[in-house]
Image 1: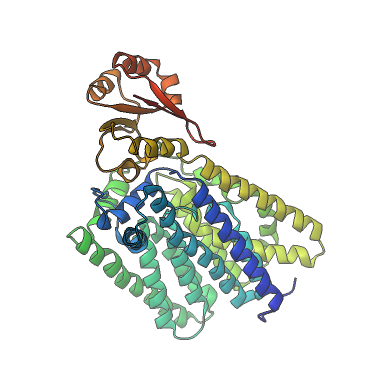
Image 2: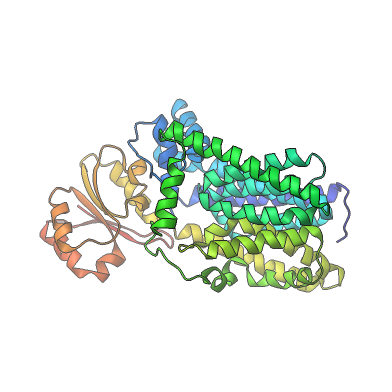
Length: 469
């Protein structure tokens, strides 16, 4: 494996294989496993679908609405125009723009590495990233960090180039503002980008110009992508940013059932997102680094440190660092290969690939597949006008249950009195079976209300659901 900078036909073919294979895997995951992970994905879908359908939905006030309106709304509009009104089909179609951007991310990594280290290493980095379970799994969903990762990579690529420092800095800042609009926490990537400036160019004055332009581009982009977007959608500039700051940083709240994790949570879960069999490739890179690799270390380590300071943590928040993990791993793979450790290299990569494939499939098999199946069947039952559910997002909320049903939603299993009051006006109720087993008094309330088990749903590794009628 050399350091050939030419656009070799062989490496071009391998790049096409990586792009096609990773894309097909994401398409299969998104199409076959119809369900939701945490509710943020349902929120993205409903925000995007509502403007062009009869769905009555008010987005959460802390959300910037630019991304769902740019990516989901056009898909919903086209589907409605050609008569593809089926709710399940719409959910599947809405994933396609995100799959396309995930594929673009794979190609962008190749471009970044190719510029500094040649085609061979670029294809290896693209493959490591393309088959890492985080972009592979979440790239088959509508979660927004696929898009913010695209913006981060474009910004990094722009700053890697030479000439037109001010223009490059302004454009990179604008892309970072778009990443910021996708999810406000992505602002953590601004610091390592600024620190990488002096690394990528030895001229201090040029680095200073680029960083000043980077900051200016970010502010101008934020004015457009956040300020103007909020003015057009919420009626007040920067309203969602103010609400996000209040909710997340001032009140330190979270919509998750586990709103707080310890500071070292990402480090304690490093074996999951770093993947142990990729770690050996990082060792030789840590000892001898090129400018690209030094900048990649900054883009990997600094965001993890900053995100660790935020009270709520999820592994999906680390999607923006995975490209730089792949860049560093590719450099280590080249050095392993050059030293003759070829069998070891192949074995480590095979294990990494199998680990990632299993993790990505498990991520989708654990989605709310059972709840969605129940929702689609309840939607078709005209006799169900009022419904009680636990975690409506798992059922696709009104997107899948339909706009006509009156719904009482409990995010956690309710007290017996609350449940009895809700059931008095319900035609059906849907519960996780594990909640019924853990809280037998809930089943007693259902019995007293005259509701019996109608159907049970247990698909793949999702939480089993019992529907009472």
